[in-house]
Length: 184
Image 1 (cartoon, rainbow, N blue to C red):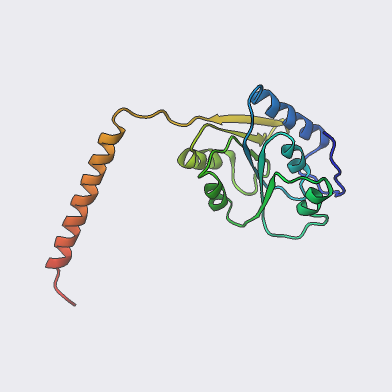
Image 2: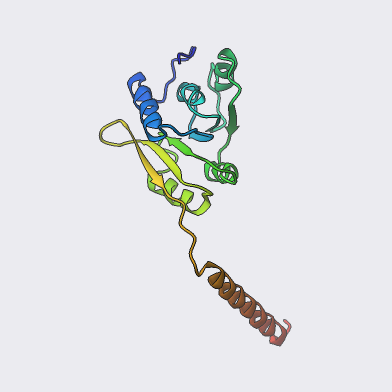
């Protein structure tokens, strides 16, 4: 689909945008995409394309002035499935939006953090498999990594109970030490 984009500010080339769209379509072939988080949306060059691929897009960027802005581009194209999130705390915002299922994250500005940091963060917060699309260093094209949701461990409840016992024991021991300590 063609979108009206009236800014000179683009995060990547037209060819890279087309390559990203193709990569997303290929990866999610015959599957519906419910939610994509985009990190570093700027004026919305990539956001507009993502809005046609996903039921919902969470577009995140720092709070700074760009004209025409992402909200202006969304309005110009009558796009209603994008939520714009101004943030200086990307990990906090990502965590907030990952409380519900996220299918993909699109990331292309390595000045925020690197792909390994993002991947490790997703592993801690994910509720489903997540595909991270990112702009590669050397070849200047998009790649993806699949971050699988860990399978349920058969001993998970047993481990949780043991951890609770250890925490309770440490709390009891800490209280005993506090009670025995002389007042200053």
